[in-house]
Amino acid sequence: MGWEDRPYYREDSYGGGGARSLRFLLPRTRLGIALIVSNVLIFIIQAVTWPVAGLSPIATWGRLSFQGGVAFTQPWRWVTYQYLHGSASHFFFNMIGLYFFLPSLELMWGWRKAFAFYTAGGVAA
Image (cartoon, rainbow, N blue to C red; front, side):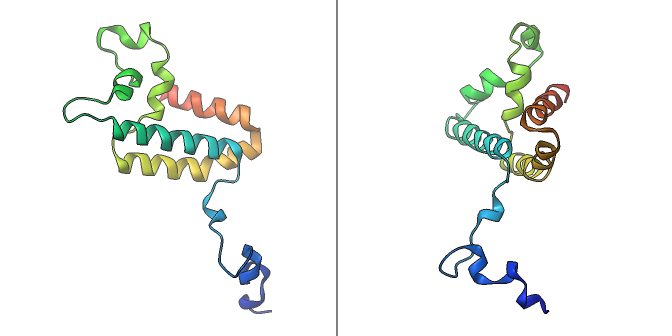
């Protein structure tokens, strides 16, 4: 059997019309999809609302800052900052990490433990 004869190489195994599907690009777990989609949406909103000087309102509200004890009087910042990104490359490499590592954790531990690990890792970072 040559590599051309294998079922995953055939055009019809990718679903309909001989066109290859892009399903292989999507994470295969619900938590992975949910976190990547939420990060993409927040990144787009953050980029659209970014003023010429200063920070976007989302970054101002969600970033983790220790000036004036804000991090201790507004505890949501310990979680919200991990959804904010400073640049497109920062965003891209974080999503690559989520894409490759989170699904295996979710399949091993379940979505609740994987999400707790993701959140605790962000808080600890």
